[in-house]
Image 1: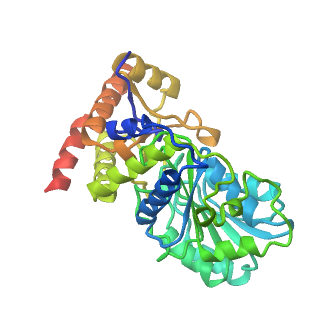
Image 2 (image 1 turned 90 degrees about the horizontal axis):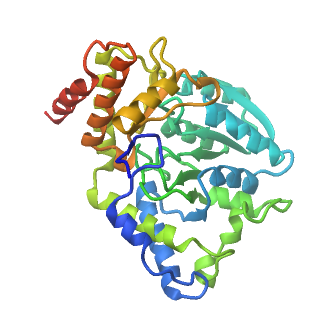
Length: 382
């Protein structure tokens, strides 16, 4: 089997410890006390990652499940919903809100910059009759982060619940759910946490729980109804069979992060060095500011298609990088430096392959990008 280095924005590498955890004997999740305790223990580890005292649900399904479940559980027909749209995933919330009956207002912001909090503040002064607002912490396609630390308290001041997609930022960017007054914070197993894909993580505030409990109409779905987990620990009962092996893997991945104790700093160091290298090479970022610590999005050089770059990097150097979709299709390429992918040796190999591949495609960089990365890492350490 080829030794392919996969440096896309997720799924990420998992450690041997996590792989071994998946191989543990499967417990009966409906009948064995040990599994209820393992689920609870994993929740408590997630609380440390989220910096919250609130419960965090672990759902069987990829991260998109959480985005739709949050909308389905909170929105009733006619509820006013504000969708803060400055990217592909922020825009995607509009469809979820509408399909579950929301009356949607869109606050549009530039797609290549973080949400302008000052403009949002002005907007909310005259438009704040919303039950909830949706927003994205890290817009993965664009490689930028939004200032949720200021947006969520602003929404909270008007009594607006916040639903935040933190799928590609959780455990890679700073996140303080309670301090920042976030109501629903959505994560996933396969990004910065570096567990296998297949789990959605949902942090739920007391305010969001009250809103779900005060619904006038039933949720129009069973699987998307977050309230069906209420009292699961006291009753020792789950609404459906749990993905035992995936939860074992998640628990171990969280242990790895917490034992390291510098995941956020490691991501910041790697991201800084990648950006320094990109600048020195002469390549151009898609985002104008607000750069993500977990993914970097770079314009393709003129005359180079993504398919040609991917084929050269993968076929010649066994390195896989990400492309993009929607309006960014064939305009950019993306390097994921999140979770276990955010390691110096992996980025050096990736950037060396990028340098050689672009040269083979007729693009001469201003400076070898992998050497610039190495110098930036040394600079950061000093």
